[in-house]
Image 1 (cartoon, rainbow, N blue to C red):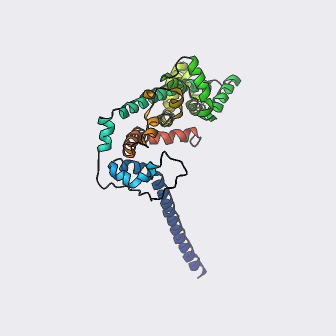
Image 2: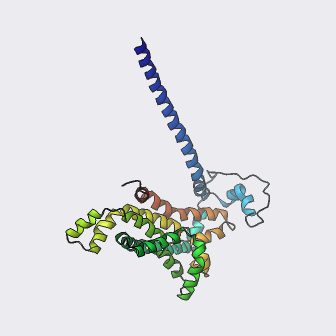
Image 3: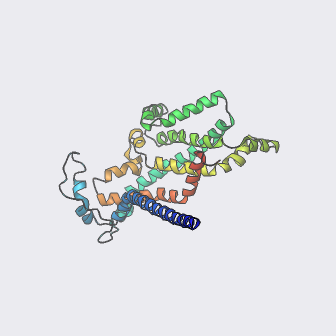
Length: 310
């Protein structure tokens, strides 16, 4: 009898445990889903509101944008109506951005011209520098790498004045090179790739040397293929960082014709809210496509660099 009671109790405990685990799973799903919707709401709001007419946007948010240039202490008496579905779909904002006012497309291509060379150059420089740091473990190399880490931890505003002075000395101030060159030699990518390359087993390198491989072949046939996931993650992070840059163009480029769309968007907001929604939507497309296409590589690269995988 005692044995039967014990078995029955064990069965009830298993059922209770399964129900508790199921409840915790659902609770976790609800909490994560809530925060996911909360973080996605501004993006969804921007996309849907870009298809609203100017009249509808003014009716919903006009009180906010009418006070955008006023004192921050201005009291807004009217309630703001957040709408995710427009009453009538309108493409007038996109017509203005792509056809009527080509200045927005010009700013978009300014962003591309500034960001793409920075990403490509930074990855190339970082790959070579990281290989040197990984293969050379001397005190001098470790000291230089420590300087890279210190520079990476500094906010960009700290190095902005030295960048300005160096750009003026090189006579590249007020040109795109004042943005591109400091971006190419930024220390972030070097740190990430070095941390990964130093984890590559030395046995693989010694085996390649026994097969007659030189340093260039070791770099191109062993290190680069193994670093593919980390390189993809670096490309994504660097692209997002410089695609959204604001301080660098404002300080180093006095000619507004060279400013990227990230700087220009702040000026559009107070002039035409609907146009700002449309331009912001177009501006998000490259970042979203890159992230969605390379999401697996990003996770893999961060996992390897962070030491989760061996």
